[in-house]
Image (cartoon, rainbow, N blue to C red; front, side, top):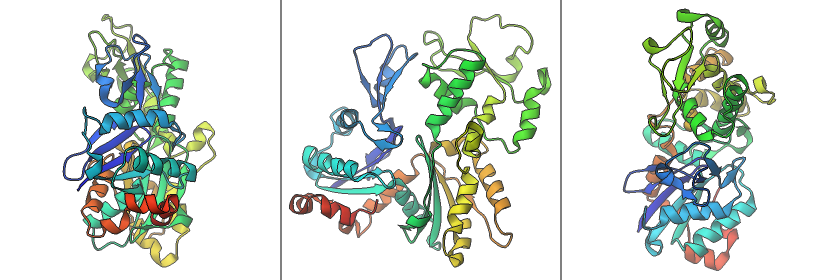
Length: 396
């Protein structure tokens, strides 16, 4: 019996058989400006000749799966003959969903997986539980860890003890990669070029140039300097999709500091945007979101737990999700949590080698467990007892 592991994120779906490798695929459909009628699904993105003004159709809104038509089409493509050629009669699936997911969404998920696709057995689980499983497998002596999952729609902070989540201390911060990209679009549109329709391009800009500042005010001062002394400033060459397929940063020595470029390239000059955008993860109040930043929320979450457990959580802080890939992210989380924590506690912040696929790897490990059969709901169980058996078994 094969097991398919699907970490179904709001931006990327991480999918693969438990005995094989993982692929990271956009979990959405696209329409391009030029070919209006044609819809591209998931990784057909590469076939679009002119991805400027790319129109995203997302199955998730505000972190919850609401657009089933799109999700079905993406899944049909992923499970179909072009990708994974799933033989549903002989396949189990592990699929992730958000914390405190609405029961109506959970019911739809059961119906689609069991009745439409007819998988043999299903395990629905939070991505954090898979990450925690993976972490405990790598660090068998530890009993507790706190998973910081900073994704597309929001950031969750979830303490796990012996692979059970501590519901009373879960925290959600409504800041994720989508908000950062949108904020960068607004800043650039206000200061230089109108890019409000160029989500795809600006998302690439964000991934290429943004970083987390270790000292915000010091970097702000550097960003104000003129000419050579301004080490923060960078020129980003925008793609034109004929000769330049993908944007890139101009090397420092080729930057023209005064005057115009002679070449016909379109240039974005970025200075404080590079660190002011990721800063929102640490101070959401900068843009009027009245919430705690990540380090403060980690400490607050741990303080809601029994005192004798707290030191164990502080020394097992695990970062997952795409936003953790900003350079400097881990160091900043460490230094701020360290400042907010009593000195007699050890603080350790772990950034896995690939934070995006970390929970998928946890799913792969769970499927190899001896007690995997007890965790899943089989199709017979579901046909006999309906949704209530899923509610009992899955701890969402």
